[in-house]
Image (cartoon, rainbow, N blue to C red; front, side, top):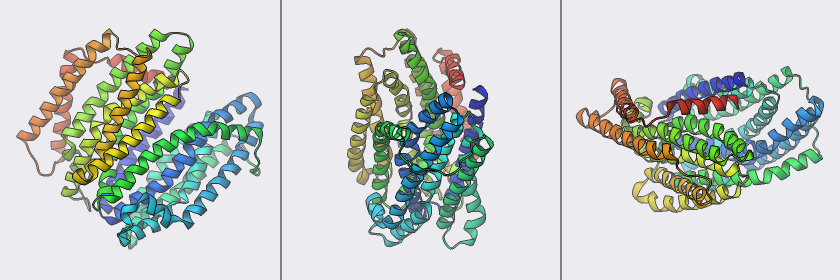
Length: 510
């Protein structure tokens, strides 16, 4: 299991690094112009349907089912079930893809209403969406076969597949875009071809693992019917999440040209620390808390939540402060080259600062929700999530005109803060969470270290202002931030580094 966790971790890290390189190249090639706006809306469309109808809800029901069949009934029964699931999913996805291709203009009238009055951007978005929409078919089947591989404890190919997406995108920008009239179409074809490559990789890995597909059978066996019944709650949850994403896209298209691109670049930078920290802590916490509750160890479950709270706050707070206070310097170093100008960095930096304000609370949502899931309560987080979506919509409408591209970012942070506070309040009210003596001592000290760090970064930028940050200037900010956060934090004994490392070790064993 440790070897599997290391394999997944290594490929995930490679994918994140290549993904950042990909975004740097996209910024250099497309900048924040109309082609970039159209491309990012077009890219969101297959991903939205993928997470709604494909890998999210489908895999939530499929992976536990095939794992059970494989271990109880053997490889032949698991192969039969996988063939049936493949046929059903291919039929389902094929229908969605065909309908999407036919009705693409109408889909974009809903998802990108702001483009409708600008023929150029709208036509570009429709054209690139039609090129990329088949990616939905290939990547959802890839997710299905990745689930099969994971059930067979074959992790490498499934973890490596996202790397191919980034490699094909990078290749399209370097070797195809220079020879096309519109580089956005080169990237769109790179997306679709990467889906074919990812599917081919996992199919090859499945054959090597000993599973031989003969002919997928389109029939609704008892296993398939049970899988669909289990999909229903996951589909509702995925729908809430994707509704939130759709709101941000819709509002972005109603803002001035370039806003969709600015929000994309800012969000990508914000997701770097969030993806690593929140996912690591959340993945490790759920099995630990579930085990404690199953054994009647409520005190131990509360202790686990406290230590996870401290660990996540310890790491997300400096990330949030650094990305907020030095947002422009971050965007300068990351993206200012080619078609991405210094003015674009100023605008994207403002959105990044607003996104970064929500980093700690968004990560804390990942800490609080296991407190409900471990007790079999999936409804309460869903209800709170729906309320947060409605709040996000209201705040977006309130902020969009005065704050422009900063509005959606700030709305996301504030609605996430409300989500986290409601989860926290309900856990406390039900007696499932309380701050212990260690947390009451450490949390104020972590916050104090954050204040010292923010003051130091602000002071450096006041003393050494630069119109466009250089790499040495950026590294200076990183060093100053680290020294003035971890220095006071360690002196005040605010951090439990051993506890956080233990959390990560539990994740690897799990």
